[in-house]
Each structure stands twice: as structure tokens, then as C-alpha cells.
Image (cartoon, rainbow, N blue to C red; front, side):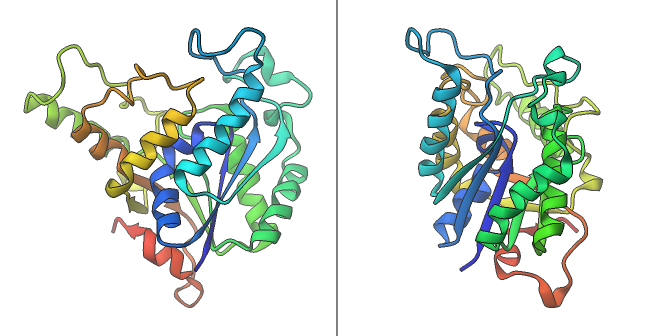
Length: 269
């Protein structure tokens, strides 16, 4: 059996981009490890979800463990940086935020965990962090460098296939399969995800969408029951969230390709 380490910026990020991959890996007997750069201190809590005096940072930390249980992950770690907030906000200049972290130093922190786990695959985000969030971009930079330091065989950059999503939503709209009044997010923005031409692999996780939803629900401080992802019709959720996409560059040599990677990741071409 193999090991997959999944590196994320904030609690709940693992639920959205790679939960299906992780749940499928765990179900197949592989070891799954979650690492978070921050504890998501600057997230906006769902109104009324926190108890009087409850600190968001403590709630979000606890939610990571509940999500890990839902996915079958065996270890959860935090690098200890603070949330940087959205790009352009004054919080980007906070001295201990992840965006301001020295990439080499942060990568060495992550590499300690990678050296312990000796993963076959490390998941990070694409070079724009999926949608331009500074902490997500930093996950890409730090993750790639840490993988070099620890000689991880495969680095899989999680991304959104915006062509896939656009085709699916338009097709369901033409077929009248979208609920009245349901609005899709702005998935055609050029800063959102990647075009299909730049994506190298997919992971089919349709059979694990319930685990993915359970992971999302575990992050109740951020993803309420009326969140657009949890109100998607089941067919749309399965289509849009049940297949996860990655950029793997460089590809491992055939002789050094881990079995876990070959088992889960399907080339698009």
C-alpha cells in the first residue's frame, strides 16, 4: 500500500478539491495524511454557528479532524502560519501570515513531515492556487520545493477543469435539469481553475461523493447547509464534484511511477 500527503492552505480546502481522491485512496487501503498551512483564522463563519465566546480558529481546527475521519485520513498536521486573507487585503502584510513566509523555510517544515511519511504522491494546488488566493499560491510554491527536498515521486496539482464544469452546467441547463433559481458560480473566469488543455490527469471519485459531502459538512463553520455546493442537485454534484482534476508536471518516469499514482490518476490524453 502507498501513502498520499495532501497539503492545503486552510481547513475545508481539502473537502472541495481533493476529498474524493483522498477518500478513494483511503478506501483502497492507502495511508492518507492531511497538512494545513494555516488554521483559517480569517474565514467568515456561517451566521449563528459559533457558540458565545467560541473562537473560530479552535472550531476550524477541530473541523479538520472531523473531516479527516470522514475521509479516512490517519494524520492531521498544521504548519502554524496565520491566514493571509484574500489577495490585496492589508492582512497580506501580517508578519506571520503564510503569504509572507519564506518559501525555503516553510518547505523545510513540510519536508519534515514528508520525510516521515515517504509519500508516493503529494497533492498541492496549481500555480494560481485555483483562484488566486495568496495562501493557495503559496501552497503551490512551498509544496513543490518541499517535494524536491524530500524527493517525492509525484506532485499532483489540484485544479478545476473549467471547460468540464462549463459544459456540464450548460448541458444540464439545456435539458432543464437545474432547479429554478439555482445559480452556478462564475466558473468561466480566466483566473478560475485551468482550461482542459493544461490538465493532465483526473481521478474518478463518483463513488465517493457521499464521503466528500460528509467532509464538507464537517466544516460547518464555513459550509452551511444552504451553501451552493451542498444544494447542487445530486447529478450535478456527481458530475462537477465527483471527478477531480490535476496537473502533473513533470511526469514520473515509467520505471519510477508509484502504484498508487497509476491506480488512482487517469491520464486525460
